[in-house]
Amino acid sequence: MSAIIADDKLLSLLSHVTGVTEVRAPDGKTIGFFAPAPLAHAELHAKVAAHITPEERKRRRENKHGGRTTREVLENLKGLTTDESTRSHLQQIIDRVAKRERCDIP
Image 1 (cartoon, rainbow, N blue to C red):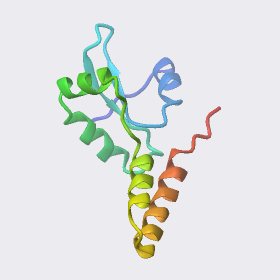
Image 2 (cartoon, rainbow, N blue to C red; image 1 turned 45 degrees about the vertical axis):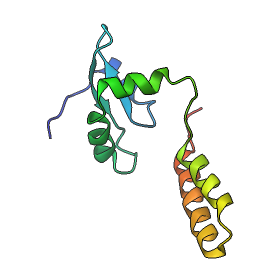
Image 3 (cartoon, helix red, strand yellow; image 1 turned 90 degrees about the vertical axis):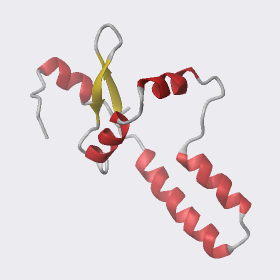
Image 4 (cartoon, rainbow, N blue to C red; image 1 turned 180 degrees about the horizontal axis):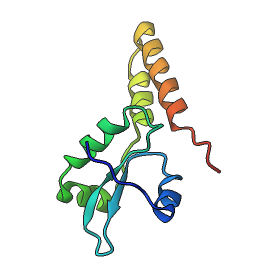
């Protein structure tokens, strides 16, 4: 893996990022992705983001219907099952996702 040394201005910008972030040139062209080190599996997140085509990123940005978060999908799945073991397992995952989504930055 290559490394770039961030100057103070870039460090200031990136220090507030809590999730995978697209980095663009002034003309709007994507130059890469940044995943903060505290993010679990940060390198993997950045690699996955890099494989999403520019067309797909544009489609997602322009989607007027919005999407659903992982937590919302899991909560929906939990509501669809009556099996207590499955419901318990889904709740454990929901709790982990909720913990991961917490943001300590004001």
